[in-house]
Length: 407
Image 1 (tube, rainbow, N blue to C red):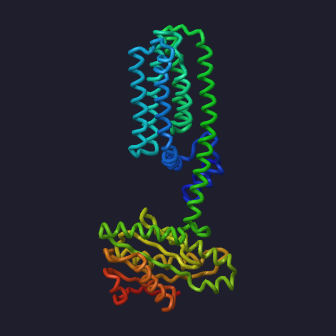
Image 2: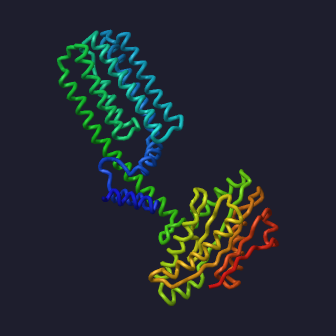
Image 3: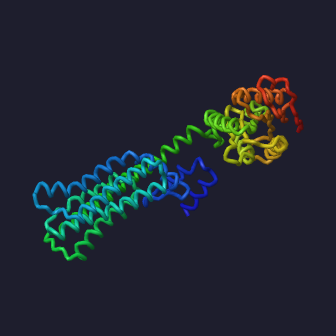
């Protein structure tokens, strides 16, 4: 029940999904599906720097065979052992390549998982090949491999468990299947299992802390972008979005529409009914405007006390004018049934422009603001819009299409 409620909260209020997940908890190191993919991308970026440590540990595990052979002058590294060592080095190198290729999220995790499983086969295979020639061959490289998997592979917890357990399983199967007599075999298995348990515990708390940091970071990012009262974008976030879509429209020679919406007679509402009533009016206004901003490149924000702004990417002028008029009437009609708040109206200044290379978003917004000024000083509760503008210098002289309806 709690999980379903958190999922509904995340769908209805995207800005609150991180807080909902934090309240829900993640003891099993799993987020809701819509957040799990986002965390995979985040963790890939955070763990990318560990790729170098992984390669160094992989090379250390492989070279340890040769080092022990030269140190003890036993000549225990066989031809098959060298082949398995080469396989391990290639797998470690491919892991680094996967990080350098810019893969992220599930794709990166899958690529690294496959490479590490191959690396495990190489390391354990080298141990088994050399143990056939000399049962006393050291197995420390297998222990180093387990440690490296849990603390520098960059994989998530459950993938690390799969890789770490694989080392133990391969080691046991190799000794049993090849009938290698190693007096210390039970102790070696005990050490390998102990290393896995310690690695699981350490990796669990590392990932738990990482997921906690992810949720707090995303919450802070949302708080820095979202107006707390209405849940819309704040001034800074909205104009960042507008500048982004403006540049896109310049490249595609597309249109941009901007509308500024101002709540009429806010001071009278606050003085006569209290600031709480004014807040309820803001919430109804935000909800109504937000219903008309649905596409990914469209956005709506609150940029002042009683002033809202919205943008639409490449709309049709006729659709925009009709939608804005419906928006004005929907707000007026909806405020009649707004418990705790008086009826209210809005004034809207809008414009739509085919973006050229010499235009700027800030200049266009200033002229849309002039339309809003005209709407408010022409009696309020109306829409004043400008269509088909090409040049900023000509904007002031072009005719405006005014749609006027009074209560």
